[in-house]
Length: 244
Image 1 (cartoon, rainbow, N blue to C red):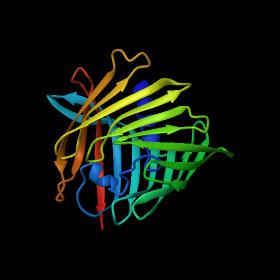
Image 2: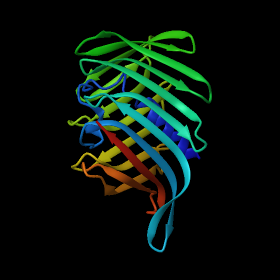
Image 3: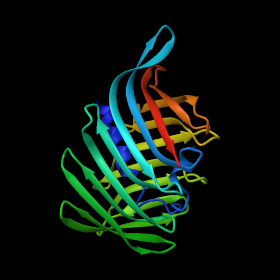
């Protein structure tokens, strides 16, 4: 359960808005997806190994994401195994850049609305309304690094991207200390092949690796298997893709 919570946290922080200065590149390209995709439904199952093969077991969660004609995400809903929504996000894009986002979290109940109010080559200013309280967030660009700070100048999170636009490192801060960190590695096709989730003390991180199978006619994977650091199957993701 600990790992599942951390992975969900990463999903929320790495949302489409308020981050990447290369946001004119569609997110589907980051994920190595091909074709004019309208919707992706990803069902995550616990993995079980039988007779040398890996099979899906109990359903863990389902994510349904919809994309515009250029490949930018306009909505994403995460459901639990009972079909109850956990998080909802809607994004608005103008000229390939996200300018507005709304995220709803069911437990604990939160509603976060973010709006881009100022945009330069060096930084962005976001107005963020969380549960009725408004604050500003400043996102500064240093090459392929983004550092987000609050109104008092305290670092909130830091993200690093590669030259293609993949997120390769993320740090979340609380009172100047790193509270959470994740890093990612990709293959030549842009598919995620490794995730490292660091503990608070930075020692003995959780490492996950990924393999892919069952590609559709567009060349997109429809089965992803995640393995833990011991090489044991951890979960399986089954993707159902709808094209325009």
